[in-house]
Length: 275
Image 1 (cartoon, helix red, strand yellow):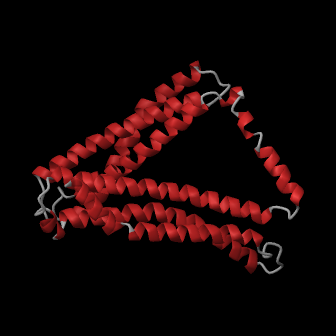
Image 2: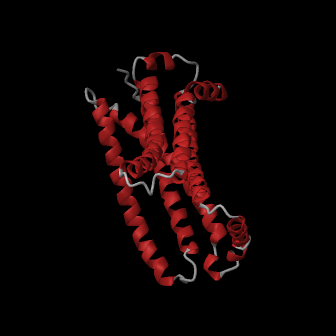
Image 3: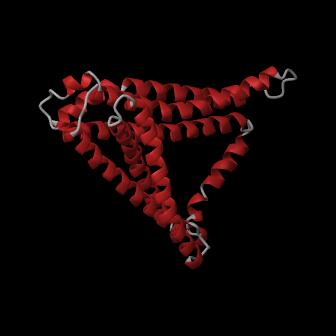
């Protein structure tokens, strides 16, 4: 049954995130393409300013994708579970656990997709900018590719020691971060429903409270460890230290996210109150 829920949920939600991501990619292409236009040397200040505004539009589009996806799924979760739609949702022949897992998986996946889209948009912007600024000579392109051919040699340097482990820890942190950000939102909304009469305000307050607690936990746990690692570690390469830092941070985020999940499952299953 969970598979059917996921299939239905995915079909119901994909249009808005894809629209936001599509707009982001278009703005990345336009912003990068501005460097090919003869506006930057114009004596009229309006033309360079318009180029700057297009680049700023790309920047705000990245923020809009991240926040927009989060808000979209937060509102959808709130409506589906805690408003009048919740009466229909709770008549489905599925458990509260399946309903919650369905929301968590879908929202986490789109958080991850949104993050990947932002990174790809930056890559697109940079590539188009470089191609726009590249001198129109064959020798420059040939020299550039020749230098890029030496990139693998950099990994033999002692300054790159532990880079593979760093990449693995970074991937783990990204995956855990998508789950953690989802549970921060879902947990805040679920806790906010316990504040009768001010549920939306309660959800907002819960989000800031959870964020503050997470920040305190990270500070208390991470700072002593970081000082110890910096005192005892070799400084030829920063990657071993960063790897440990990311793994510990991921473990803390995972524990918090799992705790929030079980709390939400209990509240939705045992103390659900619809508006």
